[in-house]
Length: 286
Image (cartoon, rainbow, N blue to C red; front, side):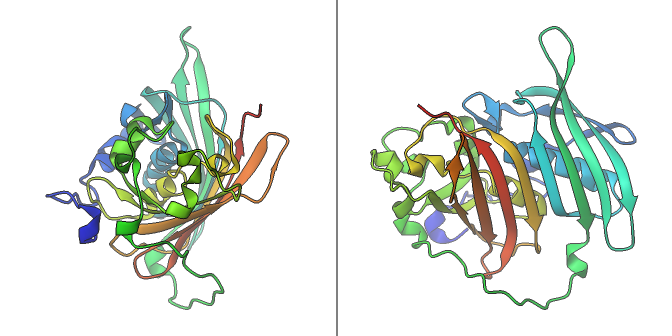
């Protein structure tokens, strides 16, 4: 992290951080994994969708012959709760450069019935094998320097709905997307921020799955409040991120019928577009 980010005294490394511990699974048998979903990644009382996607992404990385998610699509069926869960994976197809698999996460309700929480279909490859040729018209988001941005710790009270997850993130929001926090939403449906993990762990492909779903909802800047549950989320991982904080830009152009889309771009410290996503989310109107 840059000096202005107030980096932790001892920076965690990939494979040895709270994120890695909380997404670690125990293989019960081939294709079946056990995990305790950590309460540290909750928003209000529900487990964050990006954290859940990283859990399933880690299971597929173990189950498939290729190491890195290239594209992963998740349908969120019911809200996940902290506590025991089971992940089941299946190999759909494998080839020389890509392998495709599916995974689902299950928990038990109060009556002991198994409930499916989230289902994923993904294709994996090896990011290190990709060519360096890049032809793009995309440009990094214009975000002020870190010292001119604001995080949950800079306000007089916690960001509404941030809950436990805010303590695990390094998040500095662009002031031009913070009107909602002052009771003056811009109406533009935009959210931009510097992003990292609070313990200083650098980003990798799995943490990118968290990054696309970790900012406050764009619905706040449209003038809405409350929980904005994810219905479907698709992430494209484009390359392995360079060390340092990420820049995340999320936009919404259309809210209709109680649903909105969120399009996210994630840029690394080398000015490379490392991940893109589109999410369909539900909002409560009135």
